[in-house]
Every structure is written in C-alpha cells, then in structure tokens.
Figure 1 (spheres, rainbow, N blue to C red):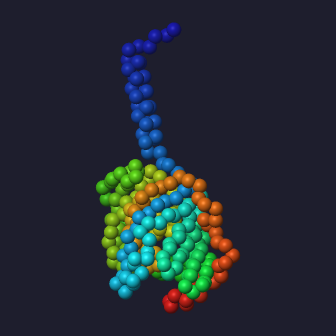
Figure 2: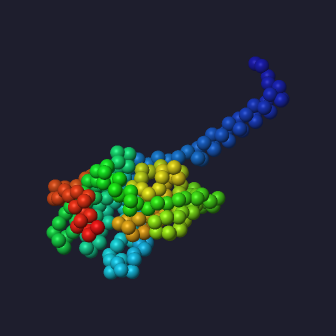
Figure 3: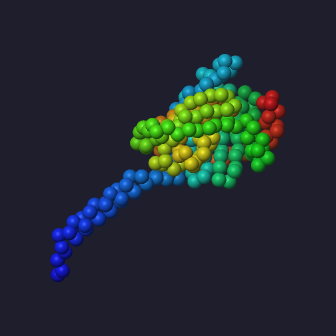
Length: 230
C-alpha cells in the first residue's frame, strides 16, 4: 500500500475540512419549500374614524389556506363574510361575498381587464433593505423600510428567504424576490392592516378551500363597484 507523505495528509485534511464546511453551509441556507398548509396571521386594523363602528367586528386573527399556486382567505364579521381566492401564477382571482342581512351571496371572477383597473387602487410601495436581521418563528428575517406613495405611510417589514410559500391575499402586494413576509403592512378593501405570521402549519387544506357552492350569484366587477357606491 502506498503511504501518503506528511504534507499530502495535511493537504487532504484541509480539503476534507473545507468540503465539510461547504456542505454545512449549503444545508444551513437551503430554502424550505412548503407546498400546502395554513398561514396563521394576527392582525391589527387601522380603521379610519368614520368606520370605527365596524372595527370591533373585524378579526384579530385569520387563517390563509394555500396549496400549490392557489390560496384563499376568509374574513368574517357580524355584517358580512368575504372569501378571496387567488392564483397569482394563473392571474386568477375570485371574490365571494355573503351578506346575511340582505340574504345575498355574490361571486365575482376578475377578468384581466378588471385586474388592470384594480391596479389604480393597489398600493404603490418602495422598499429599502437594511442590515438588521432577527429570528422569527425559527426563520432568519431581514428588515426593510417601506414607503407607500398613495397613503404616504412609512413602515417596516420583515422578510425571510428561508421558506418558500405561494403569495396570498395578505402578502400579494410584495414581490417574491424579497422573500416571504412575516411582519408587514397589508391592505384589505383599502384599510391598512398590520399582519404578523403567528404560525405556518404543514397540513392538508380542507376540501373546497378554493371554490364555492352554487348558492352564489355571479356578478361582474362593474356591478360590484356600483353596489359599493364607487
């Protein structure tokens, strides 16, 4: 058997140590992709003074279901419930409204033209990365300073690239290149809402999470706007 020289053994040991370091680094920074589950958010609504009567009826916590590229979110109050269904990859969006006091259920499937119109009321945000990081739910999160031009609001948001989850009705306003938002400001029906991820559950989502029964009346986006007085 050929015996390695002392210097060769030293070089070999350095190589093995370096290889182990690379493998550990790759393992440490490997992104976890979760294809199905539930994101649990805690919410703080910034309701305007003229709408304070409805503030107490808005949820302080909600579940967002996701599977593949689809996601859905249901907001319930004593006056109505709304369910947003979103598939950003297919540019598919649907809103389900249930208004018990009126005995009405409406469904709106947004066409590409409707989505183009909606861009006018979507928030316009500029993000600036900071050097600050922190651990949130076991994920490394990076801090961003955010300014929203339409409302003039300035706030902070925290994103992680340790986990990959499809965009949903809460996180849709942020590009996926920043990572998945864990603490951020969202906008629902024009109302700013501070959202914090409390838990990410890797579970099978309930059947029917991305659909609706036949009780819903199909209306157009224009009809919805007329009904809401816009």
